Length: 168
Image 1: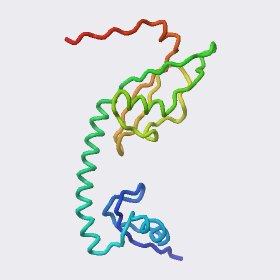
Image 2 (image 1 turned 180 degrees about the vertical axis):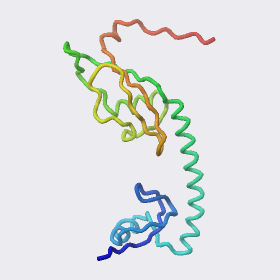
Image 3 (image 1 turned 90 degrees about the vertical axis):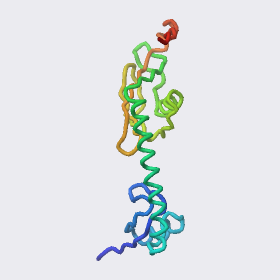
């Protein structure tokens, strides 16, 4: 038995399906019950194809701009070190781990980078002192590796405040 497919033209980007202007084959129920009523796709008539051709050109320009911004952010973030201070048990274990949300908030705070927490690749919260490498997805295949350093909170209180370096 052959499965039937319906062709629709996308009006918005849909993950794992395509970009605006792409003509894709989908199950008839998916098109009829979701894509068409939500305005995510239209039937691929000559009129619709012509109108979305202009939209697609604008989208390509937007995608190039995003890619350039991601590359600039990659250069800014690559190799950067974020320090987090935590209380530590006598056995050397942390009272609280460093979570995804904290890393994204710190990136936003220090670098002005608006990064979704799903883009930070951290399998589980960091629960040990030391230096940890974390990969941050910025755009498609563009990513940066940052260093997350977890330090004992007691060391922070004992260490003198770092002096500002004089600019030469």
